[in-house]
Image (cartoon, rainbow, N blue to C red; front, side, top):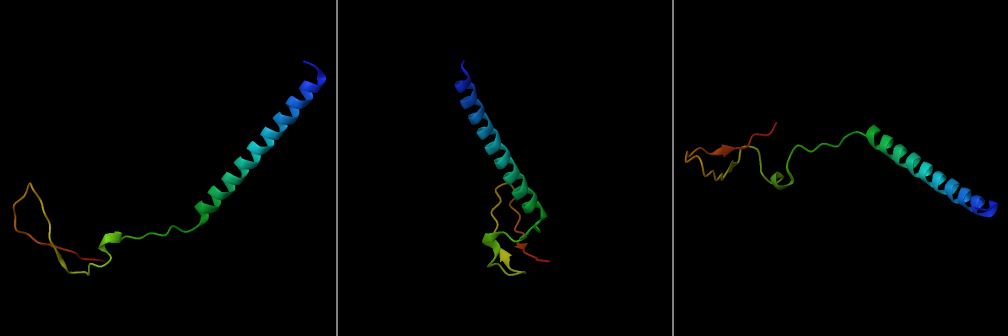
Length: 75
């Protein structure tokens, strides 16, 4: 290997190293920023948004033949 080939190798190596470090730095800052934001929690399932508290729901249970109704209570 001559000096020119070593120089080209070092240029590319430094470029890849710099890009890797920049990518790692950006990913860590976005990860830390996302951890510092408050968590938005939604306790109600999206399909249950129209169901009011106290409404009876139809439940199909193959194993149990009891005639108990299920009543939704939201707190």
